[in-house]
Image 1: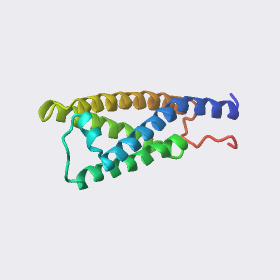
Image 2: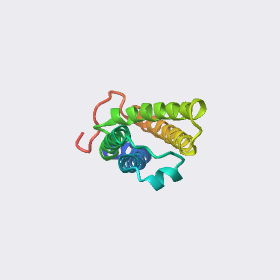
Image 3: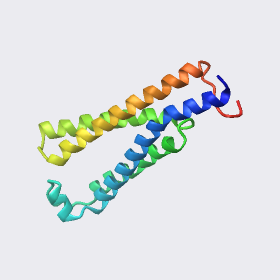
Image 4: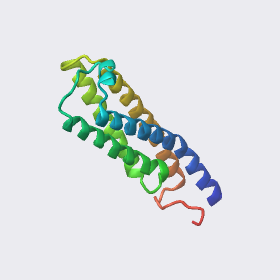
Length: 151
């Protein structure tokens, strides 16, 4: 197999991983904006009460926007930021555990349950596509060197 063919196969195997990372980045960004702005009518529809203290929700919003950047970096350059793709699995797994635990033991808010389920699905998708990508990398690159068209 030529270097170009190996490069193309590695790029193709990472395509689905990059797509799910972009979806996660967009989702996280808009959740962050929603947490910062907290329109009363939207919060009520989502099952929450009116929160008069704005600092902690805004802090959570900023965190979501920072995490969106953490998803964008590997989505744009998977080879360089592969560790952030793996990190996103941990982030989504912890988010899933937190959200479902909160729903079960503290408050049965439908958006908390839905968020836990969606984060769990995203976690499984990233895990699956990351594992697929790493498998192709290891198959064609047992020495773990960077694969480029110039190599």
